[in-house]
Image (cartoon, rainbow, N blue to C red; front, side, top):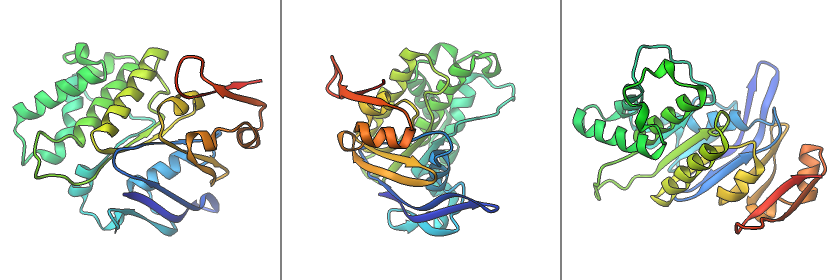
Length: 262
């Protein structure tokens, strides 16, 4: 399990998270939702070990994340950040292969290339393999980085290696068109089905309703509500958090809820 226990995060005098607890287990997709400035990305960064709480702790398999060796941590969790600046003259395939850096001593180059191309097929970017990364659109670049973080936690068939793995996605659909939003979250769902714990910061409540197993709803650096999708996506709860009249009903064609502004 990857968990935060009563963590608080401050930058200067500003408290971005206050006494927040969170957990995700292998095999599930957990969505973090809430209005702008709620602390969603800050929580994801704390879970990844990129920022340190001023109080509380983040644990991976009951061991403080700050105590994990960097190489081992990189093999256990991968992070798709919200903004990635990369201006190097790499092809898209070369960018994806960067995700295999934690395995440079255990996998050969041909094995890593095969994994990279497989990940690019899943993210719908195989056709860009030999294209200059900087020539791609923002959405195309985002999907290339999805492939990169996928192979960071992928293994070849090796039943002796059963350690927990986690994929942390910060607004993975923000630059994508409608079709690729669903493709990306379908990849996340398949990845969870393979035993990986997936955490996704999402702004679209309907995408969370379709793809998440559980939801954490945040406001002002606090967890307002958490639990099963149908327990959190309730009209009165959402109206209180988003300060907007919202209607929640059954989706007409999918076995999930849908949220509509009224």
